[in-house]
Image (cartoon, rainbow, N blue to C red; front, top):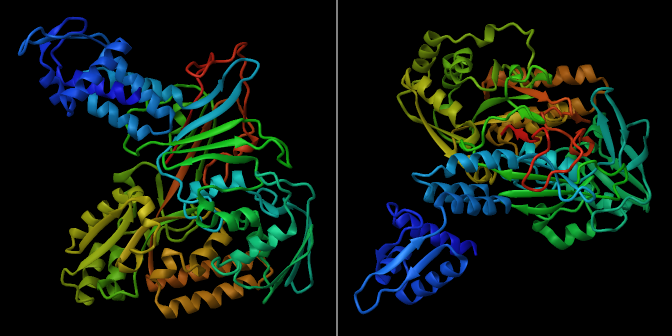
Length: 612
């Protein structure tokens, strides 16, 4: 039926001047041409449209006589119905393309935008007795992989935290560890042998009980590719509920590593059976299970036997919407907003503004010939980069210059002052003569890359910006061929993520480092892991940053902010360092006496807007 209705739209577009409910003269050959089909197929299409009541058709009598075609359905209404159907399947880009293709000279774009804005958000769908509470919101980028061992983006990591569990969890507020899948753990005096005692009766989403064999399998597959677990010497499932791990060296951050989403416990049988498909069809123990995972749509359903209590929401849906989509309206004062909006827009809501942990930065590929191999060239770009001007001109969520991964508003700002004269002199010292500097970046950061390109061009630096789609950028194959890369390094786990950045063979930072700098990183990280004092570990990591700053092996650029506004009816909203809400604790307090149907809203329209 959807295909037939699109044929109607195609035919209706071909006769834009024809009024509704008034016949026009056409020939069968004309109609076949407009529909790009044979006259025989055109007859079948006409018959179908007549049966649906969309058109009336009176064949012309005699050879060469014109037939009478009457359009019975408003084009905008038909188009919006089609676009709604496509959007409800999760294909918002496809729905927007329909509007673009057939919506000229109609109100379809505006009307569909109103509907789409109401489609997102919190809804209680179905009858009052069997209402399903759904949180539906847009995201700008597709999921790459939900296999905990193959995580790249903050969004992937956040969903993994909803679908899987780790042995222990880290409480950031109390700065202590709390039980997860393990109810107890202990280490020997050397911090080299760790024993975890697992809960009984915890179920995976496919119905099997989790055992120590699954935990041993999980850490076994992590031991090779993950920089956090390469020091594991031995893994033993002592019995069904006891796991023992032996390290090659003391590691005072091991529990932080174990609580990282990368160490989420996976079921051995499903993981071995699915292989590479596990990232698209994950099975965990978490509060939500994945029921639909398409390139444009992800659906999570509450896992009823969850060992820490069923989630309040029944379903969470994330739908990919193009970043440049202007169809979704500015949110009305409804339920919840999280993103980069100004809190001043909703003064009655609970407000919170934080600086996102991490920063944007530019790496220099020291393993490839090019101007970036010159220290004077790299140092010149540092002095030519006017970070404060960059923030002022680009605006948005950019909030302060960066001189390290972690923002410190109290730091002196001498290092942020641009010095164009010194930069120009350093370019002369480098012998730079306009050679191209190939800067690779993703769609998310193209504005920053183009700003830097214009800035450096003022001083004769030839920056060639190459932009790749987000998922293509994650393939790693283009990284070694770039002279530099611009990206956002997000530290969801502070110390842990910093160590990954310096140590992982899949880290952009490490891939572009010279071999002698990689060796320095490895020695520094080994010392950090063996240091029991948290304060000293942080100082050692800052010293490692300072070393790379002096070498200009990377260029720290900007810190970003996350502004969060929460409606009073939203309960249980717990935000992580990336600004995302933990879905399993979220619930909505509404005072309406009736439950809205799938296409309606409650007394206060409820929706969510998510930042990209």
